[in-house]
Amino acid sequence: MQTLIIKWSVGYLIFLYSLAYMVSAYGANNSIYITQSGGSSALTMNIDQIGNSNVIGTTSARVSLAGTGMTVDVDQIGDSNVIAATIAQGNSSSFTLRSTGDSNTQTLAVGGTGDTAGSDFDFAATGDSNVLAFTQGAAATATSGNTDIVIAGTSNNLNLVSEVVGGTNNWDVDGDSNDIDTTQTGNANHSITADVTGNTNNIDIDQTNSGGSTSGIVDLVAITTGGVIDIDQCTSGC
Image 1 (tube, rainbow, N blue to C red):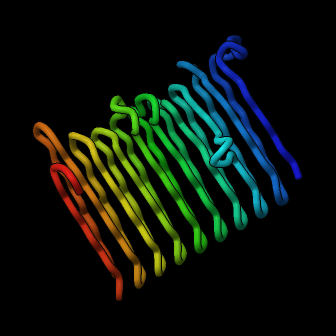
Image 2: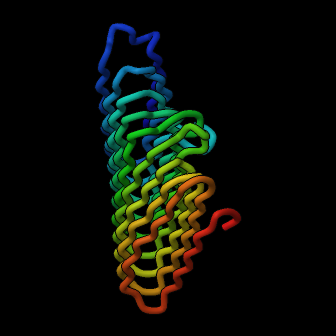
């Protein structure tokens, strides 16, 4: 078993304006824990884990990132891998997560304490029985989050919550018996564009727009047999 624990802050790395960091782990039961706060300095991070039962953070010891202009790329290849990460604040940042395998669990919280303006989150999963819980924008200042989800497999579970102003969700799902729950709240301009192919998929969309001149858009194309689709658009209380 390998365990890698990394903590840094801008005070320790004052001599670096741009930080590049790469971790590669091959085999099973590898663990990575990272705490990073970079202020306005850019961070580039690439993490590759290949094998089964690998961990990047846990619910009790999450990976924690904060900064502006971050680029984070994570690849997990194998089964029963775990990711738990918090991006407290991240303007103009890019986050890419790719998961290949079965029974993997990803828990991500973005913009919990600050703005995520101009940030982009991309998630791609190939495999079965994977779980993604993604929350974006708990802070009132969080704006303009863009989320792209691509799923190929069966019995996957997606729980997506977007509380940002101007939240955009795009997802492409190809497979059977997937369960997708999406909630968008806030006071302006939410949109969901979805393309779903497969049978017995369960899709729930709650979209709340409140205050001022607002719009909520759902553009859904579903090729399915025996599926359940429930869409609610409200000014409050969805």
